[in-house]
Length: 151
Image (cartoon, rainbow, N blue to C red):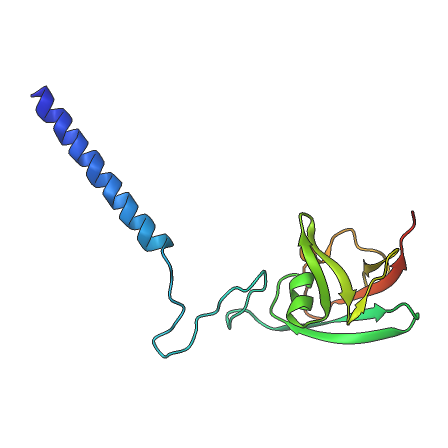
C-alpha cells in the first residue's frame, strides 16, 4: 500500500512538472510579430514604446547652444519620458548608464570637454531628475543649456 501511494505521488509530481514546463514554453516562447493581415504588431525598440494604443502629445524644448542663441523645437511623441521622446525624434545623442540616458549632444551639437547639456524647466531652473526619469505631458516646455562644468 505504501509503495503504491509513493508511486502515485511521484506520478502526480512528474505530471505537474511537465505541465509547468509546457506552460513556460507557451507563455515565454518566441512570438511571431506578424498579424493575420500581414502587418506587424507594435514592437518595443530600445526603450521607446511604439504602437497605436498611446495618445500623441506635443511639447517643446528650448535649446541654448554654445553661442548663446536659443532655438525652440516642437516635439510630438507617444513616449512617457523625456529621453524616449527626444530619442524618438532624433533630437539627442547619448548613451545608457546605470543612472539613465546620458545626453551628450542636443540638436546635433555635441558637448565638448568641460561642458555638458543642463536640463532645465521652463523657468530655467536645473531639474533634479534626468531625462529618463522626467515624465512628459502635453504642453510641457523643457530646456537644454550648454553649460560649463564647475570643478
